Image (cartoon, rainbow, N blue to C red):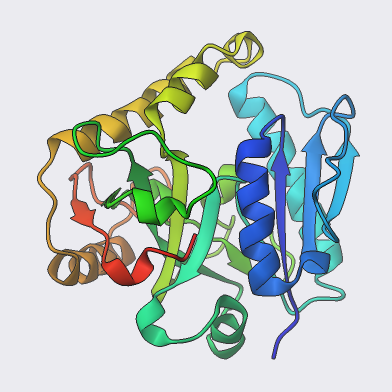
Length: 277
């Protein structure tokens, strides 16, 4: 079995950090989690268990500059960790790499068996609240038990797992100077749009708005609208087709990223995923 760790950087977001540590701690062991708090003004939470949590100098600036500073920092930390680990998983704090339960293997066992040279991606599932059918999220229950629909958004098909030192692009969206490979049984589940009320509350954060987050929040609200307004397609028919399309199609401005050229597919998530996260 390979030694695997996970890294993330977060600022003032205990809501998702609790879920991140609980999920990846169960999959990899809490001692193999590395959480970097963006700013030394944040206290290290007492509930992080054996996770390695460190407060760092703030990566300040507008959204684009801060994203670049954060990802360069995490790429360097991942390179150091690869001296001790076979693989490093890098995600934002609201992202969860999962194996299709139909495979019957937990994350560490599955990643130990597949090719990762130098990276591997899961198909992006952008989870949004269906405003007509779903209630506000209950953080004490599994999120996928409360959310039935996913937008198959290529933006979240990220280069999440690396096997050697590389330079991630901002937000883990790609590995610079390398191609990507989408695994047939991996999914990157993004929960940034999981709850409309929470998103609305965050969109009023004056500190984030001053750094240029207004456009980012608007994009997330768009996912909720897409999930609410579009009829969901059948998973078994749509997901394999979208995965093939993302393997083959690239945006002209970034040939090492996948795209679906703006086509919007919404799918209903199968029951077998309900208790994963």
